[in-house]
Amino acid sequence: MENFSFLRNRYWVLRHGKSIPNERGLIVCSMENGMLNEYQLASEGVNQAQIAGEAFKKELKENNIPLENVRICYSPFSRTTHTAKVVASILNLPFEGPRCKIVEELRERYFGPSFELNSHDKYAEIWALDEKDPFMRPDCGESVADVVYRLTTAIITMEAEFEGCAILVVSHGDPLQILQTVLHATNKNAGSTGTDLLSRIEAIKVPSILSQHRKYALLTGELRQII
Image (cartoon, rainbow, N blue to C red; front, top):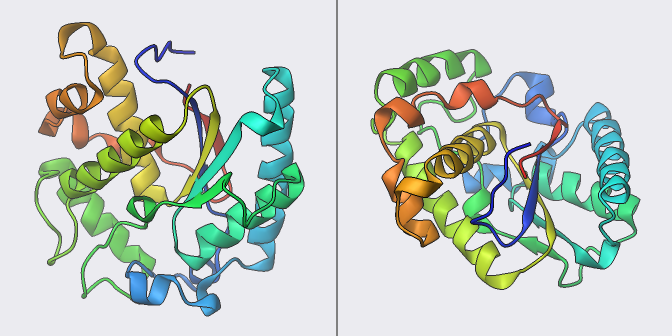
């Protein structure tokens, strides 16, 4: 496990469980559609979220982390909110309390109007573009670099708000791939860049790093410890 000494908290990431859009093979990436209840978890996704919650509970115990030090930060989309709620119930954390927090910057990557509500087979086009140029926006959507910009805000906010916590970040495939890319690259270059987190992240915002985010892909309902 890498030593992320520049961070004040420990982080786990969880991709939402299998959703109704996943079952239908649909891309749902706009806030407007993403927050609709009709696009929350499928029954299989609820099971995946329960399994992830139990796995997270076990890892907390193994790391001697008390539940009062746990925070859940989640995307406002219905499928991530649903996932976070299931995990909170497994951990017996009050979902409406201060320990579970919506972080809008963790929302799904917006791929653009021609992808919204279209087949998820079109993801291949986006990822091919990302590999070629992670600063290029697909069809008026967000580039990898755009997502890095808002995830940087999310990380800095969580680091400012919490200290010594175990933070579970519940988000989506692309944002979590990109978040892992940023944190691992920032850690790798920690000795050669500035001391503040923003400077460190800015230093790794280069095509050769950002274009590789797919290597950190997560399955639906997959839990992964970053630090």
